[in-house]
Image (cartoon, rainbow, N blue to C red; front, side):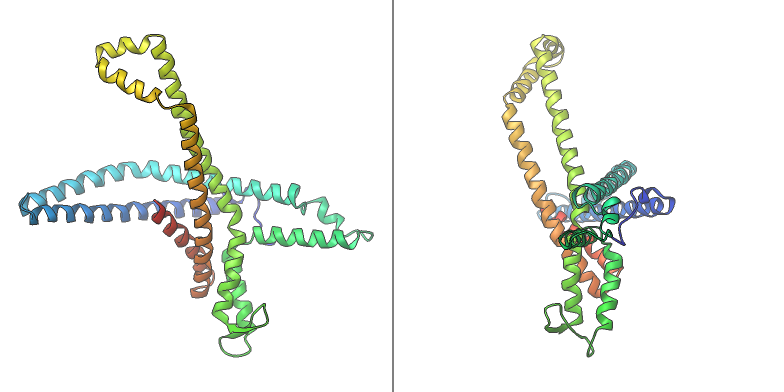
Length: 312
């Protein structure tokens, strides 16, 4: 468990600064790329209208300038709040990761504290030793740092080459060094990404349930207020027909429909995170071949981002 981090390591000044800079950079780059992509789509639509004779080129230019000024201001104003929520989410996920690691180490696999000391007692039977060694191996796989593991695996395999670019795989078959690095790092990243993706999924599920809960409670308050006649008095001063119609439509949605919608979105989220987990692990494996260390980190990120973009 050499890569396992302290529970509050992410709150240390250096780690806190690096994580904040990283999250900020990712959100700024995402906002910029989305802005330019939307701008291009808007300009293409205006060009199509010019070709169709609906507007003149000068009007298209004015519309493009207006869109750019309006959207840039909106996204620039929303960026600080977006970064703030992203930083908060990052630390919530990281804290949950450390909690899961602690639970796994102390209560599930029992490889922390007294369990480690007990393994050294002379009268411990062989089965207990084997089970403890397996538990340590599992915990080591779950807490492996892909960055360090990528560098170690690449260096180890290059040292084991019996001819340029060739090694003997774990199956005893001669294969290329790059392929063996990719195979081993894919397995490493699969294990190492279990807890991070589970923590991220937990946070997203919590946000989803909270959002549904807030909406459901607001709906119940509106229904209760209408039954007491409070809403009707306000509706008479605005637009009674429209307000009553909206309220009736909202009340037609049963509690079971809300539960079914929540279950559907929750299942969709689980499926999406599962695909992201596999794609991120594959990206980490490919990145390790290209550039051991940072290649694994960026490969993980790219794999996760690609699946997110395809699903969204």
